[in-house]
Structures are given as structure tokens and as C-alpha cells.
Amino acid sequence: MLRYFFRRVIALVPVVFIVSVFSFALLYMAPSDPITMKYAKRGEMPPAEVIAQEKAALGLDKGFVQQYSNWLTKALRGDWGSSYDTNQQVAEIMKSKLPNTVLLTFSAVLIMLVFAYPLGILAAVYRNRWIDYAIRLFSFWGTAMPTFWLGLLLMYWMGVRLRLLPVMGSGDFKHLILPATSLAIWLIALYCRRIRSGIVAEINKDYVTGLKARGYSNTRIYLRHIIPNASISILVMLGLSIGDLLGGSMVVEVIFGWQGIGSVALEAVAYRDYVVLQAYVVWMAIIYTFVNLAADMLVCLINPKVRLTEKAV
Image: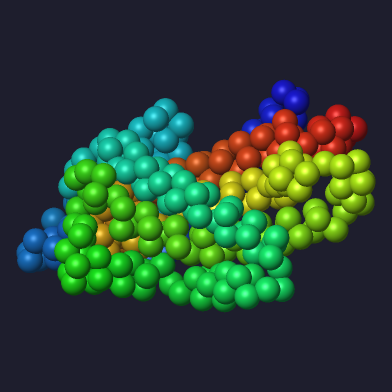
């Protein structure tokens, strides 16, 4: 198991390196530059000589290879640079905003687990009946709706019309409910369908017939065998979803004013703050790969077949 873990970690290094090269290249080729955008934000436009001097001081006048090697050397030492816009250390920005995004992501996942499993189990147990059709209709509707549109609906009804919850900010638990729910609705719709499919596939297997022949109750068969076996593939999928949410919740963060890392990335895009953007892309690549690695390791621990396969490799 440890050998498999270290092999996977070593394999992640070239992935993160390639991501960093491609993201740096795209930012290098982007139009405009952060110095000009910084002054444009302030409503100023200094002489071209001043802008050229600032670019030279930051190393922005050098070629791609030189700029990337300078950035990589500093990043490997833990120095991610300073924001061109605010002069704040990028590492401090990430450390202060990333916990909010992690909290939002795992809150959405928790809400999903609370609702998706009961819905998926109901749809599987009562398959091809009206409750199954209703849950599948919700699933198709939920996966088709953009999360930002759901967020705007929740903001309007729960915050503006009914005045039950705050619509902006990230001060306390109440501010977390609406953005987490808007992300969770899409997850619930997606996972209840996958859970239903997994349970139906398990129900049709021979071991279930054997357990029933031995006199096991349906409740015991579902809780001890069918649901755990169906959850193995869900666990792998959950690792992908957590990575997607950590890197893809920026629109919801902006809509609800949630001070997460996604809102920082969008602001960096607006002002061509390439140092912040590069750090964001690399950090998200690292987090995404390690979350998926953690999910794979859990599957290896839970599923003996996977453990045997890895030992044979």
C-alpha cells in the first residue's frame, strides 16, 4: 500500500509541472500587462518610461524561459511572489482565502450526502414507480441548471422575498447556507442518479439472491451489503467532485460575496494579476490531484479486489 502511495505521489510531480508550464505560458501570451492594468484601476496613466521601469524591476521584460525559471525557483523555496495589484504576499492571500473555499466545498458535499443517498435509495427500491420517476425528473432538472442560476434564485427567494437568510458576505454560519445549498443542489441531482444506478446494479447480482435465500432481511442486505458495495464507485466520483468544487466554485463565491479563493482568482483575471493567477492554478492542481489520490487510497482500503490488483502490479 505504501509503495502504491509513493508511486502515485511521484507520478503527480510531472502533472503539476506540466500544468504550471502551460498556465504560465498562457498568462505570458495574454494581452495587456499587470502594470498598465494597475494604473488603469486607479484612473492613472503614467509615462511609458515609468511603466517600463516597473516591468524591468519585476522581471516582466525578460523572455518566457527566464521568467518561468525565476518563478519556479522562488516557488520551490515557498516564495510565491507578491500581488501586482495589492503588493500583498500571494502565499498569505491563499492561506487566508483557501479555508473559506474548503468550508464551502465540504458543506456542499455534506448537504449532498444527507439528501442524495436517501433519494437514490428510494429511487432504487421503488424503481419504475412514480417516486422513481419523480426523483429521476429532479435529477435531470438539477444537473441541467447552472449553479449560478440556482444561486440567484435562492438569493431572490430566501434573501430578498422571504428575508430568511443574508444574501452577501461570509461572516457566520447563516452566510454559508445559500452558497453551499446552490452548489449542493447540482450535486444532489447528480449523485442520487448515480447512487440509484449503483444500487440497482447490486440488487441484480447473484449474491443478493443468495442472501435472500438464507433468510436475511431486506434491511440487513441493503445496509450491510448493497449500499456499501454501491458506494465504492461513488467514493471515486466524490474525489473528482471535491476537486471540481474547490476550483470551480468561483462564480458562486462572487455572487454571494463569499471571500474564498475563487473570488480572488476572478479579481486577478480582471486586473491581469498574473502572479496570483499562476499560484491559484498550481495550488488547485496540487489540491485536486491529492484529493483524488486520497479517494483512491480509501477505495484500496475498502475494496479487497483493488488491494489485490495493486499488489499484483
